[in-house]
Image 1 (cartoon, rainbow, N blue to C red):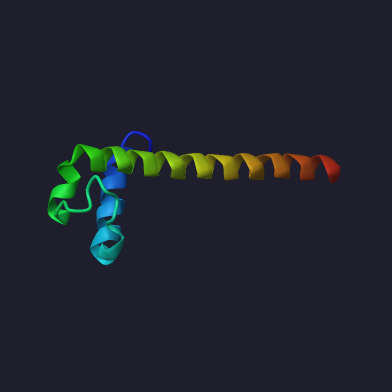
Image 2: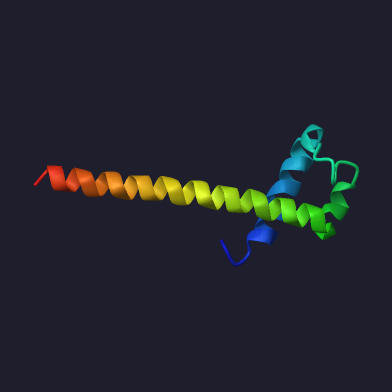
Length: 77
């Protein structure tokens, strides 16, 4: 996921905006036609930020699950 996060983010966000065009409101690209978003540098940066946030959230959940599992295993011994 990390190696292709910009492209993945662009695909996810353009798909989202295709389905829900009313949410394409971010000022830097709200007036950019959907078919031109993938090449827009500000949109790519925004997509990267979204993917980083998603990755950080997943990492935090996985850390929590791992720590909880480790604690549970110690208690069950």
